[in-house]
Image 1 (tube, rainbow, N blue to C red):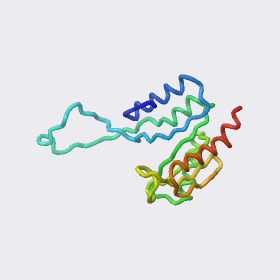
Image 2: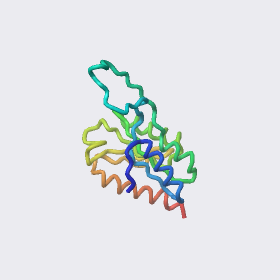
Image 3: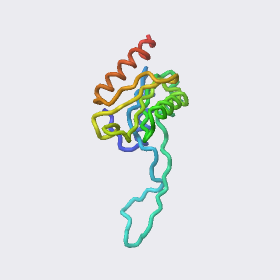
Image 4: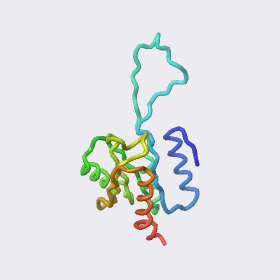
Length: 162
């Protein structure tokens, strides 16, 4: 287990680890933040003196994009969390993402749905590739989703490596 604290730490650690030896598969299951504050303060701000603060955010580097650029032969599985989309919108967005980044599989979910997404043990996902939907996994425990995903990876991706 490698512990990181920031998205920048995760970015650097993933690229360093993938460059260390040859891997066949990268499952990008982390959920790094998309934006970080542009300005950082070294000490507590005095709220008696400062009445208003404007926060500017900067996009963080996309780990999955850099992995795909640097490791072209690597099989890459990504996760895509979306909010308040229909099934068709979610599937189409995941297929587009797979094609844009040349991903082998995308596991998409809508975190606005009841008992799905973060901070719960259950989820509902759509597993897609560049051509379309492979499997819909209705609301179930995340362990079952992991088993289903590993079965698909074994059947569709790893069996073609050797």
